[in-house]
Image 1 (cartoon, rainbow, N blue to C red):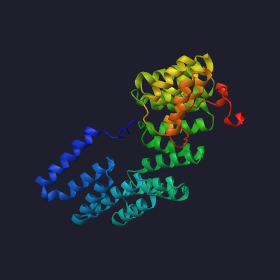
Image 2 (spheres, rainbow, N blue to C red; image 1 turned 120 degrees about the horizontal axis):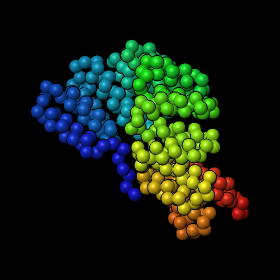
Image 3 (cartoon, rainbow, N blue to C red; image 1 turned 60 degrees about the horizontal axis):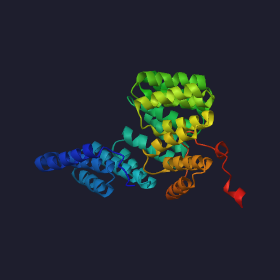
Image 4 (cartoon, rainbow, N blue to C red; image 1 turned 180 degrees about the horizontal axis):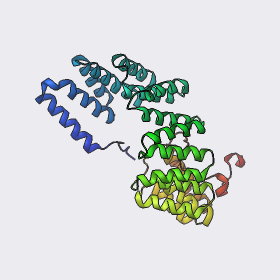
Length: 330
């Protein structure tokens, strides 16, 4: 299947055309319009064009902010291509031009997170938290970092700082809920997820997270209720579809309905680790009902994908389906 862009093609194409038009009609604002084009092309994954327009900004720049912004977008272009060291070099140049450039600090921390260099990531996020007006962003980044390192208590403490500063911002509520769930404090986690869900009733993620807590507590009926609420909001929510399928299989033994939900989920995913996980689960389900044609099809789909990932979704274990380990056949 063709890879689908992860951005709004129509919107960003319109923005590109707008900046190109302004580049011709407003020569006195060339630096600004080159910067706008660089932003468009980074988002559109047209990295060579992004670099070209960033360099144009550097040629025309009259302020340190323009210099810093050009280096930030070049850094993002390298970072998007997983070239972390060149990205860091550009963020440092941005900070040389403007030492309190908050985006450059945040992206420095994110780069070191990708390198799993948590000491340096923490340094940059702390610097970000020290900037007036950006404290909550730094605290959120620190909360997410300590969650990733499984230091759940410190993670919760920073999410709480962020909540205190911006109580209507849903991200720290969800982050705190995930950290509490990491400590297996599911009742407390659900309270945090509910706070987030109440602040964003059109966001399916809060209902999904509550469902995962109930599922971890083996309360399949309440888990199903919240997954269905998530799907009412977002019918294509892949992880919720997967987990509903798991519930139908694990607790009702309803393989047919489980397959229906997993295949709905698969239809939403073009490629990647999530698609592979869904194909593995479908392969196991079809093995249970001895549909060899479907088993072979999903085995071929699995082979097309590379790598495994740690997802929010709950995967299906081999023992759930009675599938033998391949080594057992030897």
